[in-house]
Image (cartoon, rainbow, N blue to C red; front, side, top):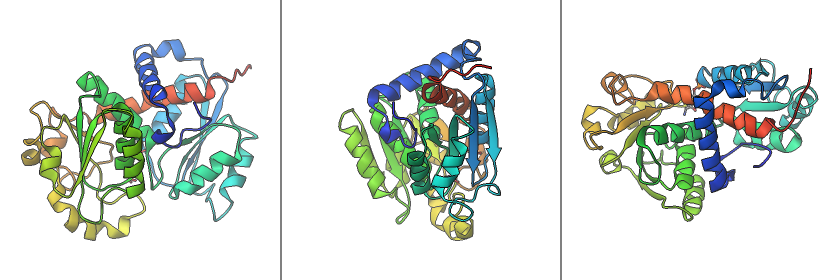
Amino acid sequence: MQKDFLSIHDLTQYEFHELLDLTREIKDNPDKYHKKLKNQVLAMIFEKPSLRTRMTFEVGMQELGGKAIYLSPNEVQIGKRETAEDVGRNLERWVDGIIIRTFAHENVVRLAKAVSIPVINALTDLSHPCQGMADFFTLREKKGGLSKVKLAYVGDGNNVCHSLMLAAAKAGSTMAVASPKGYEPNPEMVKLAREDGKETSFSLLITNDPRPAVKDADAVYTDVWASMGQEQEKEARAKVFAPYQVNPELMTAAKLDAIFMHCLPAHREEEVTASVFESPQSVVFDQAENRLHFQKAMMLILMGKKEKHG
Ligand code: CP
Ligand code: NVA
C-alpha cells in the first residue's frame, strides 16, 4: 500500500478488495480495534463544508483510540496564507496523519509529496475516493458481490462520479454514466478507469440519455447538480439537469430490486424526488454509516504500523 490514499486508481486490485474485507471485519467487530491507533493524532484540513466526512473521521479516530483535530478554512488557506508544502511540513512535526478536503486536487498531491506521514484525500474538485470506496462496500453489502453488478450514475460527471468509475474498474462492475452535454466526466478519468478496467470485467457506457444508462441497473446513483464551489452556477445548472432527475418513472427502467444511492447532502425535487429518496429502495444512510467503517479500515492500514505509547 502506498503512503497516501489520494485516488482509487493508486490501489492494486488486491488492495481494493483487502480494504473492503477489512471494512467488513471492522464493521462486524468494532471492539477489537478500539486501541489500534492509541495516542495517534489526525489533522483534518477542511477548506469546504462537511458533515459526513468530518464526523466519520473524527468518530473513527476516537473509536480507534486516537484523536482528530479539525482545521477550518480560516486556519489554513492553502495558496493564500501558506503553501501546501509548508502546511504539511508544519503538521508532520505534530501529528501522525492528515486528511484534506480542498478545491484543487494538485494541492493534495503537493502536500502528500512534501510530508512523510500518510495523507488522505477527503474530497477535491477531481475526486472523492473515500466516498467511492465506502459506496462500493455498500453495494457489495446489498448485492452480495460486485463483478455482476450494474451501477447507473445519473447527473453531473463530477468528483463523486470519477471515484465511482475508478472503483467500478477495480471491482469489475458494469457502469453507465448519463450526463448532459458538457457535463460528462473528465476524459482523463474515463481513460484511467478504462485502463484499470482492462484487468477486470469492467465495462463503461458514457451517454447523454438517462434511460439506457438506468436500464437493468442494480443501483441508481445521483449527486447534487452544483457541487461545492459552483454555487453561482446553480440556477443555470438546474435548467440543464432537469431531465436527469432520478424520479419513480426513471427508477422503473432499473431492476425491480434496484437500490437508490446518493453521497449526500441531497436536494429533494432537484436531482432526486422525495419519493425516491424516502423509498425502501434508498440506502443513503447506510452509505453514510459505511463511510465510518471504511475510513477506519483506511486509517488502520496507513497509520496502524506506528506504535505509540503513553
Ligand atoms: N458525502 C460527503 O462527503 O458528505 P460531507 O460533504 O457532508 O462530508
Ligand atoms: N459533488 C459534491 C459532493 C459532496 C459530498 C460536491 O463536491 O459538493
